[in-house]
Image (cartoon, rainbow, N blue to C red; front, side):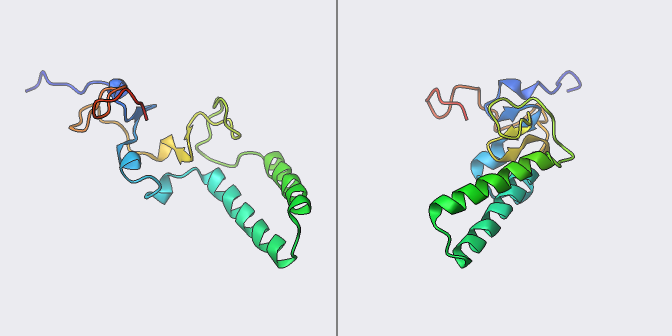
Length: 130
């Protein structure tokens, strides 16, 4: 038994940067602690803004301009996240740990040995990757 060693999970469809996406794929959004802290904060800011805009009965165009200014301010404040890793491509945050709205650093580590292993490109007979 001592010859059995964990394999890298990078050939598994649930593997992303050393983390396992299985539970997130099983129940998307169930673990709120896995969501990106910055996006969650921005969503809260937007929800608060919408409530104020409704209270003041703002039309869509002026409300959109106000939100654009507020969002520019949020971007200028910078990314306040202890897990932030620069390098994300195509993301407003530019964080390489962002996968949709999930922070990969918050997911469980891939152990390299898993009964749920599913090769990339194969999901119940299809060639779709997550």
